Amino acid sequence: MEKKNIDWENIGFGYQPTDYRFEARWKDGKWDEGKLVTNPNIELSEAACVLHYAQCCFEGLKAYTEKNGDIVTFRPDQNGKRMQDSAKRLEMPTFPVDKFVDAVKAVVKANAAWVPPHGTGATLYIRPVMIGSGPQIGVAPADEFIFRIFVMPVGAYFKGAVKPLKLTVSNYDRAAPHGTGGIKAGLNYAMSLYPTMEAHRHGYAENVYLDPATRTFIEETGGTNIIFVDKEGTIVVPQSPSILPSITRRSLVDVAKDLGMKVVERPVKLDEVKDMAECALCGTAAVLAPVGMIHTEEGDIYLPSGMDEMGPVSKKLRETLTGIQGGDLPDTRGWICKAW
Ligand SMILES: *Cc1c(COP(=O)(O)O)cnc(C)c1O
Image 1 (cartoon, rainbow, N blue to C red):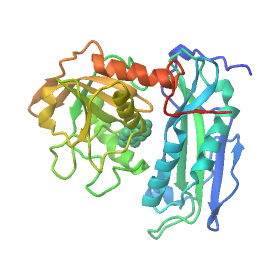
Image 2 (cartoon, rainbow, N blue to C red; image 1 turned 180 degrees about the vertical axis):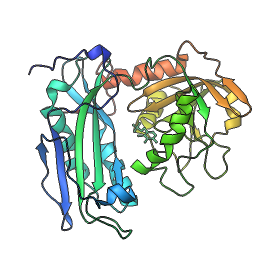
Image 3 (tube, rainbow, N blue to C red; image 1 turned 45 degrees about the horizontal axis):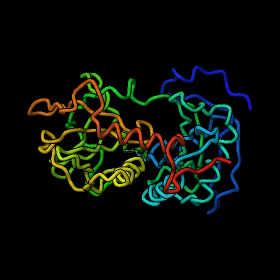
């Protein structure tokens, strides 16, 4: 198979239509077989539920070329499970996890020419998305749904990802108490678009959202979880029902334990940040990106790890996780899933 002629080292993080996508349709109370299709566009009713009432959830995962040339994905079953949780909360039909994993593999295989080679720093980003496509004007769930999985090659999510980022604490919330913060709903992102652009306009890479009920605890950014390292070297992971359960974060916690590090998962007050040694953002797209400074109403908090480099603990975690994903380190937990 001949690879596409792409400057792999210099691709950004953006949409690029590739050759094939998977599509399944829900109608008359059941999913059809699903198949690979070539058309990147979807024709929809003007009254499609997704267009008015945001009945939409999605996922994000990646395929990697291993050192030995195998093309693999990372824990796709976890994305399949999480998408079921999202679908249930939004009154959408669940897509079976085994079929989800098979469909992910089929799309990756069909687009093998687009999977970046090992060692380029680029990966194939995989985007499953489900929408309520049936027409609906009275407020109710759709009766027809479209599930798609499409892929594109991507580079780093944050430009210069190993340079520490500047964040700001948002005056807005991305999720309501007892709302949808814990699922991967498109509507959570609609809530974060304005605050994200405000943060960018003021020179910050992202917002830190606080817990919506008391605004005293750290939640996450618009699209990544946050982890800290305290001065004793313990990994401190904020806990809250409105934080999206990141698979990257859960994997990093296991990696940290395997490396003999201590991990605590508990609510973390904004007040505690000044006592932390390191802070980093984690998610599939960003992997693990260091934070150098957080702007708050009481002033700027600079992490002791500085503005030039990633802190040593974050660096070790990032190298270990990317090492497992790229096949340079052994996969002792069965996280790696061969595409064929
Ligand atoms: C997808 C997402 C993450 C990251 O989750 P991963 O499973 O690690 O990719 C974090 N926060 C939010 C709000 C998300 O939507």
